[in-house]
Image (cartoon, rainbow, N blue to C red):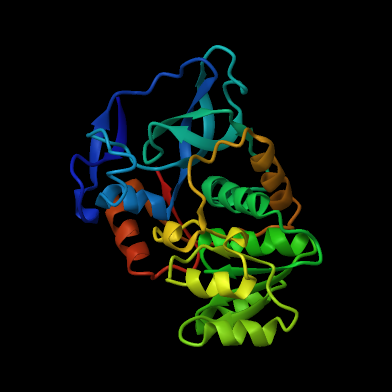
Length: 301
């Protein structure tokens, strides 16, 4: 048996309970890890609350969580790691647990802490995926809404490293943090479009909306083309002719290996805000939903 967080109904953070569950068994191509860190992502809270029920209904009882890092303790046939290896990756069947299954694990360099390794997977691959879908190139200008958030923060760094001019909308308190990444930070809220125009007199080529703050109409107006705008957070995308980028983080291992390499070299930063023991998972969700965080929240089973 193993200890895990489960929920058996949709609802507030209080539906998350510490439970005894069967020890997961790795199938072909999978490894089982003793979890050292599990990342808390915004999608976890949307699933728990029922916001994703029509798209991806939960099978109760459910173990939440998408990403983990840990030490391999069992392997399935054809697995890409051996017992004792330190790895990270997207989990199969949930990560808020003492033990979890990973397909296509990526080796964790010694330079990465467990917290950073677990926090990189979904947010990093999402940022990497969207930049690829937009096709933004060096010398062009990209506007990132929600640039201080977990996905936006990485997207800003990846884009800047590729020679892309980045403008990020942020709250007043985050202007300095995002500016330090090599972006031009502007305050979001009323008048944001005018402030972006002033910051980018040559115009905006592409927009990545990671905020879901009702900015799509003005973003389309800024670029002049809805095809140059992508959101990962605004469900009204179709009304504006904008692409909604969703789906799993499964891009093979190439994207994640690139991200791991960048972090290990100090060229990419994943800010960790706070860690929680598994028993305080409900508090972690409550803190993130109240927007108390300035970086990733991580569970330490």
